[in-house]
Image (tube, rainbow, N blue to C red):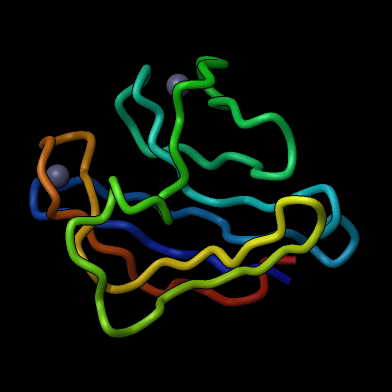
Length: 118
Ligand SMILES: [Zn+2]
Ligand SMILES: [Zn+2]
């Protein structure tokens, strides 16, 4: 029962990413957009396993809720997901300005996508 979030940037970059996990998989799966510094792109990674890029396998990836990828937090939350466990935390994306790997500036924005992809 996750949701989808859409990302787009003035440079033309666009992507759609799942947030959270499905009904049956929410304990093993928590999808969240991450920046892969190796691929220089936004990837969909599972935060409940060892964090690695699904495309190149690099561990040099950062979830988009980290402050270093967000220049300016927006006032509205476009996606959030909390998960428990040993490193339980709340993941959040706002309508602020995020790092775009394509144009290398903080002009990427997230929008609410379709809900319930499970
Ligand atoms: Zn990668
Ligand atoms: Zn861009």
